[in-house]
Amino acid sequence: MSTGSILILPGDGIGPEVMAQVRRIIDWYGAKRGLSFDVSEDLVGGAAYDAHGVPLADETMARAQEADAVLLGAVGGPKYDDLDFSVKPERGLLRLRKEMDLYANLRPAQCFDALADFSSLKRDVVAGLDIMIVRELTSGVYFGEPRGIFTEGNERVGINTQRYTESEIARVARSAFELARKRGGKVCSMEKANVMESGILWREVVQKVHDEEYPDVELSHMYADAGAMQLTRWPKQFDVIVTDNLFGDLLSDVAAMLTGSLGMLPSASLGAPAANGRPKALYEPVHGSAPDIAGQGKANPIACILSFAMALRYSFDEGVEADRLEAAVEKVLADGVRTPDLLGEEGTDPVTTEGMGDAILKALDASL
Ligand code: NAI
Ligand code: MG
Image 1 (cartoon, rainbow, N blue to C red):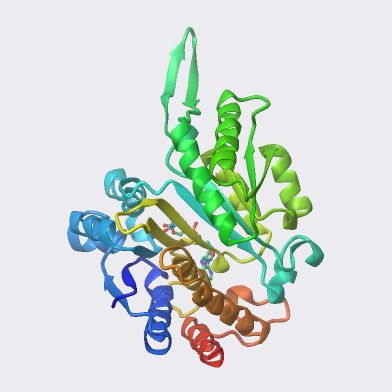
Image 2: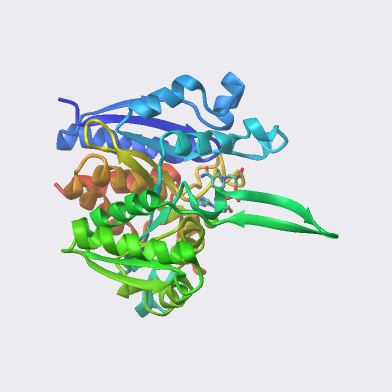
């Protein structure tokens, strides 16, 4: 029986290079752990534009809706910068997020011990850090109406509206509580209930979902500005943080930089459970297509590989195998294997993208 279906969308720039290493790891799981994924591949972004004149073909969209998990590399590049807005590569990604209704964006901030000196914070503060930011992704101030630039009297006024319904808050809160049950059992919800009505509602609804459905999870509330301070002062106090679209945009970038290189950061975007009980899901590295290093074997595939580890955990309920993959990455880093982005001042010999893949596969073999 198939473990589940995966649609791979490598995209542009370094996307195909890092995804090639993920494919080797998927094959390893098939050969060595009996996880037989039903894998298919398609085009997104500039690659799709070149082939079809659109950044995401309708057939590809339909296949993404059917897949248990979509793995995306990256989209965009200078070649496409002058395209009309409606067919820009990132529109392909936005269409996927919107039509799959991926409302919970998961951004882990995890600090591998071997890289703790890469952080701008002290080693103590970040070593062993493992937190998860859950950002609401499909509503809030980036979408609320009215919006626009209007003229009032003799000057212009720019307007955006923060708007959240109870059901939008409740569903992302559930995503956070479910995650906490699989992790450290704690959720901290962040808003500005002191100055925003949408924040008051956010706090009430999160508390209600907690009390009625997840009383076993430890819930706390924090104003988002205080949360930003606490994230840089002592981030290890947190397990799961749940917050709205705007605060989540900022807080997840702050949390990301606690841990070092862009080449290390995975993400997941989850929606409602499909008929088979699995959430609609898209997994992708946080980084972009890195045109400055594309085609040179310099890209770090770890962000993409850790995104697949998240797929194992959240789409396929293979938490033990996700742990195995994360441990393999940790082992390789502890052994000093480095792509160029992970080299400090002194700089030992870097490995190529494929060399990093080789090392991780070897560590996986050794884990058996
Ligand atoms: P970027 O994330 O592609 O690159 C920023 C810097 O980080 C570059 O110096 C790059 O070489 C380095 N870098 C990124 N990923 C790396 C990796 N895996 N290994 C080693 N080094 C890595 O962001 P940038 O340069 O602002 O954007 C480049 C293109 O990517 C643009 O077309 C942009 O629109 C697109 N983009 C796409 C995203 C996506 O597909 N989700 C997200 C961000 C940007
Ligand atoms: Mg951002």
